[in-house]
Image (cartoon, rainbow over all chains, first blue to last red; front, side, top):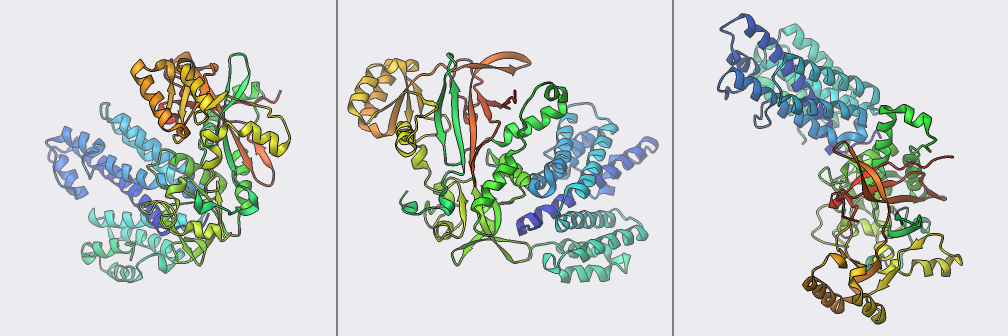
Length: 223
Length: 344
């Protein structure tokens, strides 16, 4: 415990990223779905645009079925949850069986819901399980380094998504502050300090942030 | 295994974890069916099954005096600590697609060991190390490997192995790391050696064996071979080089042609086979599609050799899903359930 390999470091980081991707994309989907109820012009294409994903869907019904539950759509919420699970399953000894079980339950639920009529409550239950997972990480992940790495992944994913989704400057600044705090706790040997520095400088100018997404995503690329 | 010849492992312990397969005949006599001394698996399954059952039905356990089985991780840790040569306790797994990966990761979690794949480990100056994410290396003192001997070290065993650690055996032979269980143990749990175990107990311990072996006949003994081939319908033939329920053939289930084929093979390669009397062991109730049915079942008892040798007060009960089969191995579709040892 407390000693992790480079392989596990990668898995911890990507576990954090994919969990956050699922969480934020569900939230964004719910927001877009809610808008669709009142606004005829705000169809599923607007949600695709909002999420920055290609429109490969036939119609609204196909979008809901495919984007939420399909294993064949690489951008689907299910596919991202599957990737979170693929990282979590090899980390049982680091994150604990209890934390792993929340990801497993979320995946099992998604698979079960995929055969049932769609309801927004299904996604709320997935959100609940993800929040339980994050709570469990705080309680059961004993190694500070492992916990910080998962949370670095979460913060980096949030920044990436928030920049793509055009979140306000204050929100980005808040997220970046959380990211920096996490980064300060792990050894500079564990990430690309140069990329981090470049992105950190770019944070001062929101207008150029979209062009810096590549830099952001290089911070944790293994050198 | 010549690579292990003449080497005594740390503290002289070869079989740290032994999985002894037992069956109970219908006359209540217990028989040892097989000794598993290489990498016996399955302890984690009754462990997790018990944990879930206690959550789902606590009254079952408050109304019955079942001995707690949660001691296994502590027993395993003590077993590893006992032979640790100074360093980390590591569980070596071939990876998540191995059928027993759950067990590898769960036991790592429960014992506080590091779960590693071969790429996380390396040998330097006859010591085994674990590479951490800061670029430093931590020495490994005990390695609970869940990889067969032949894949363990490509420099000393199969060169094509992609899941082993190069020169691991060199570090082991230098006495710098304990490997659990010791490589080369297969010589002791070979089905051809099983025949001699009662004699070994008498010779080395000067004691009568408490548990019986299933009556076994050696096919390389001409007299026993002839007698066995004359009554093929009454016996089960086992290929000593196989495991996991493979290579087990009941004479009564073979056509005449197949019987002749097997008899010829046995005549050609007698060292490869043993024959055993068929023990009509008990059926236990299991649930199938929500209904209770009876199926053949055996018991794998786990014996851990640390500073002292202890039997885990639980075990893996394995059952056949096929109503006419005696084969309980999970690799052949068998199931498992928890085993209760009652304290009264």
